[in-house]
Image (cartoon, rainbow, N blue to C red; front, side):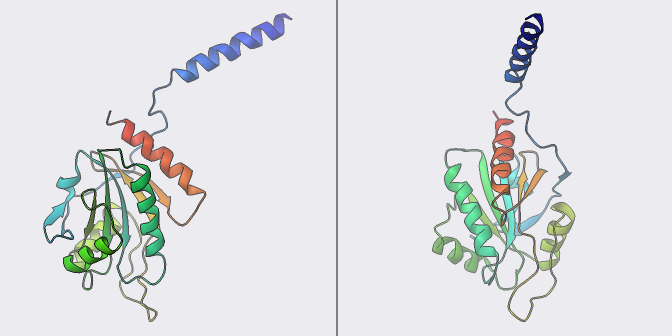
Length: 195
């Protein structure tokens, strides 16, 4: 009897301590900083890190003529945009790995055809060397140099959560259904830091 009473007290104490944990206890630690960058958005305006500071954002790398994974990446981002529609501090950023083709006008037409929420979602393009450096050095993701015979360019399938200070917080494979829960949990935790 004394043993079960003691176990109940320990369990009650543990539950009390656990329930007092801060709401962002699950926020992933920063893994690196995004270096300042300057590209062009779908409206042809200069756009860079400065415009994203103070906002939490989810980023991906894609290209508009992609014959394989890009539509799935965009679909994953669209799901997030719908699910987190009431989060005023959340933004989305898609950066083209085919900047020669994906001019601002092409990006704008792409965004319109998919009915992306353009006030919250910027599509960027710029000099290949700048996109390459941003992808590999700041985001630490793969970037293919050339288009394959089937019209594809090697690039990552990961969605990247970046905090309001421009720090990479986590990576999530957009093609892995099992990663969706972790992505949403991490995103909620990073957004909670803004409150």
